[in-house]
Image 1 (tube, rainbow, N blue to C red):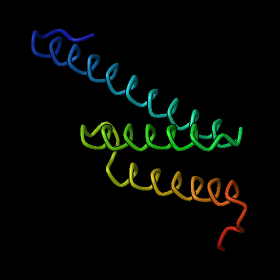
Image 2: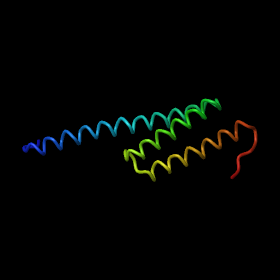
Image 3: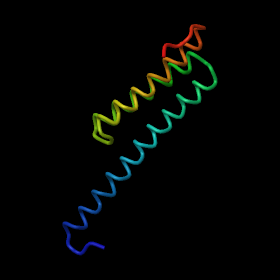
Image 4: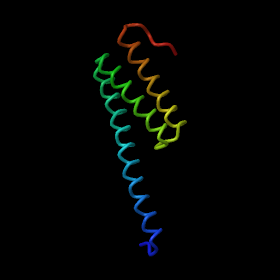
Length: 97
């Protein structure tokens, strides 16, 4: 445990940031899971809406530096590939390799 006043304050700040970051990361994971669930169900409008929500959460987290911007871009790219596959499968055409 901290002894000095400044160390106690720093510990409070760390804890506050940790809670904020964990909550934000959890919301990202929930949005991505909702997208994957909607994709699996085959509901195109729900999949599109969940994709938009997940991308927005990733962008906001990257802007606030909760996650690294490159990680957000990588996740968005992975989701976009899955979204394109789902929309191609839904339209009846064969997906491109």
